[in-house]
Length: 240
Image 1: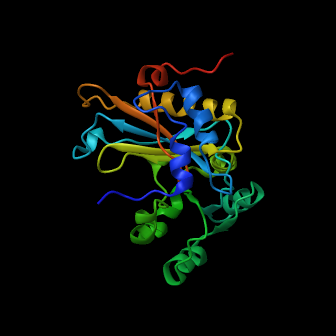
Image 2: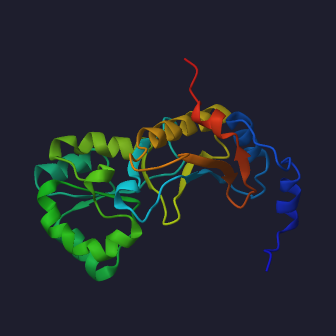
């Protein structure tokens, strides 16, 4: 049964020419123009990749630093103790602790944070939270750069607050990534999309066969999808 669309969505859809593939600049502007919600919607890029997620070596999990941030306030939790905990607090982490913080998550289901960082010495204790943090994408992991030595805590906290985010493909080979808000300028959205495309191409699995990036779509929260010209998306670069 076809999904029924509201009047606002259908009006926004009229601004998109059927069968046309837009340049990244045009698509990002259209994402702003076709947003009809009464808040600053999230602008997303959706990529269909030529990977087989059934093979572990073809799955993508990495991070990207968006130069203009995500437009979202990031709540940071740090598992650390001693001097490392004090350094995390000084760097502005929202929640810092060791055993007591682990117990709060385990017993009280406390998940009021967006990213968790841990020092290596804490992972033996944090490991028991895997069943709770793992499904929510909150478990510290070396692939996401969230297990770091104490000396690197201030820099890591600054990076995740400033726009470093993790992304991974889903079980169908799709990749979904928020690159900002509709109140961003087109130039800010473009710069963030360039950063994403650069990383996606840099982490192409060696086992991926055929065309790697098969489709690129830009959209806003609840807005219509805007197909992007793949060749132009892959050739994106920020002017010096």
